[in-house]
Image (cartoon, rainbow, N blue to C red; front, side, top):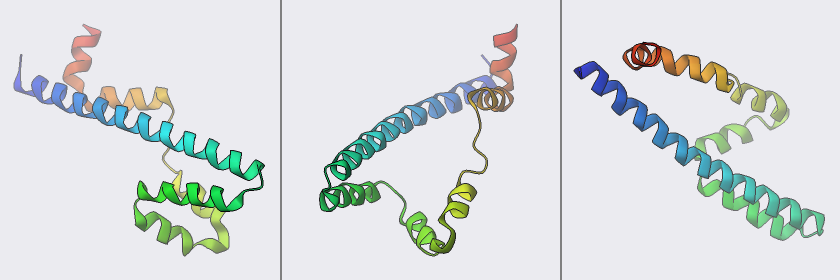
Length: 108
């Protein structure tokens, strides 16, 4: 096994590990949104707000400050943050390009 292949395998494992972390973060946020929606549907804005604030312990404060400075057009700010989003197919293509040695083995 070449050093380049070992490096790619290690890097790919790091990417997969981060993917697992992101899945759990997304799951947590989905659950929080469900709880917030529940309290809003019960007309309990105070409890919904408390749950919404708990999200910020996982969000980088610079995003919150940036969002607050763009309150005149939050939709435009949100859309700007979403630029560069990719589909699974696009992400797979990018991954295969990042790890050419592994791709050679996969397609051999």
